[in-house]
Image 1 (cartoon, helix red, strand yellow):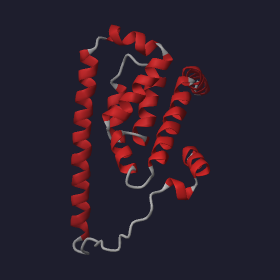
Image 2 (cartoon, rainbow, N blue to C red; image 1 turned 90 degrees about the vertical axis):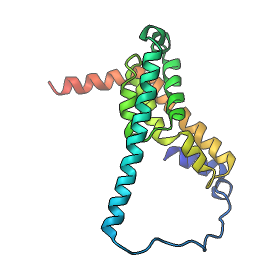
Image 3 (cartoon, helix red, strand yellow; image 1 turned 120 degrees about the vertical axis):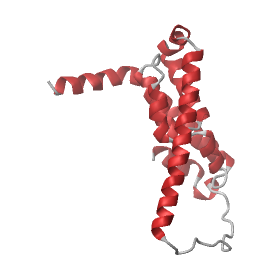
Length: 176
């Protein structure tokens, strides 16, 4: 929401959105069997999510098995490289938000703050979403949304090396 408000304030609505196209020539689906339509839609979603999970898990396995934990440790121990690396993976892997959790959890060498960067940015910004943005927003708006979102997640997650242990300690101490 913050990024949206900043983009609106900086660019204004008329400079952010593409000019509206005349879309009066579209048709809606038939009003046939609603239950069959719901089941077909659910099955399609299941197949897309399932295939995304399998591909994402495969890529995570290749990364985890292709690079030893010792090779990833220098990157994982540095907050800047760990968070940056996970942000790049989040944008590049193009996973769905359901698969992000499983894939992000498999990066054992990386600390919680870096995994959080992957989990937070992945659903908000990836290559597929940027491609969809081109149908609605002007290029300047897409760049501004992408930069502001990535920067905000980067700052929150790099500072997460300080505040996440405090939050965890507060909740662990409060439950005893």
